[in-house]
Length: 448
Image (cartoon, rainbow, N blue to C red; front, side, top):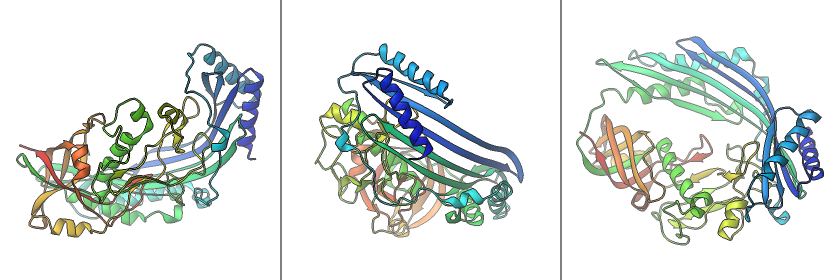
């Protein structure tokens, strides 16, 4: 057992001695580094370490929780007492409690969550990377004459979990990223955009030149944006925009939304709710990705789940509590902070790759919109209504004609999912959620 596992197990033991009928403890430690550079000068540099513990315990069907950053015996004793005091004043919940012991476990796969090469990267190198990614963007074109910054960040962490029903486990993880946000000007108007690269391993980051140049390209293509009149037209979501649609799907299949009757996908299992081209997977067992883990935050082993298969809804995602509410079993999708009740979380949540190239989508479109930015939060998961501010590139006769801005795209998620008529072959993970390019047959575009 790691040191953190040993501490977690001892906290659980103390909670039981204090009168708890069940208990679980999460410990986390981490080292964070970030540097932000603007116009070649360091604006902000942060390096911090943290260590903390969280306890959730039960007295029958009453639960209480507490956290501490003081891992001395006295600090832990106070945390246990605080959790006991909180449980004493809460109401009973018939669905509260730990998972069944038969559900516990860990995946046997090597998930490649930790890369030691990050430990070898010194501070001057990290600062130099932040400067280099910004410089690469600035030198791309004379119209890029300003910047909101270049950045490098990294995080090394360890997490441990133990409970009173025999589960104990821990894992380490690492992550790093570089990004640039250039600003371009033309005809008295300014535009900005960004690009970034992230990885578990320092060696697998894209080069500052690649990231800076791509950030510049995305910024330059926004210059000269026009307004367009209100109309209905086909829509293409590029991958980073399609991820937002994937987030809407996740919220709609979350057990929290289902048992609260707050999802347009309630009572839709085994029904067709999307185009045949749409298959959605939740998989925390893919090596090297950011949504991977050997077990969830209740000690349930990760496994691959088909959420939507060729347009048919196959499963909701649950932690133990939402599963009990729905009369089913957890899907191993518990997430949590240090303390408090778990929420429903995702692993690597993605739409499977399609067969159409983004270039072919554009080339086959007589007219339509390639969405490159979304603004606002105008999505109602209860009824599926969708309305968001947007910007993008107008397509005419199979070619990008000009950038557009100050528009709104609208529809209903029920129709949007059913009207996906092309899925790109460009799936790429830059986070725990990923989608290829998506084309929707028609949406309403509100303009001038």
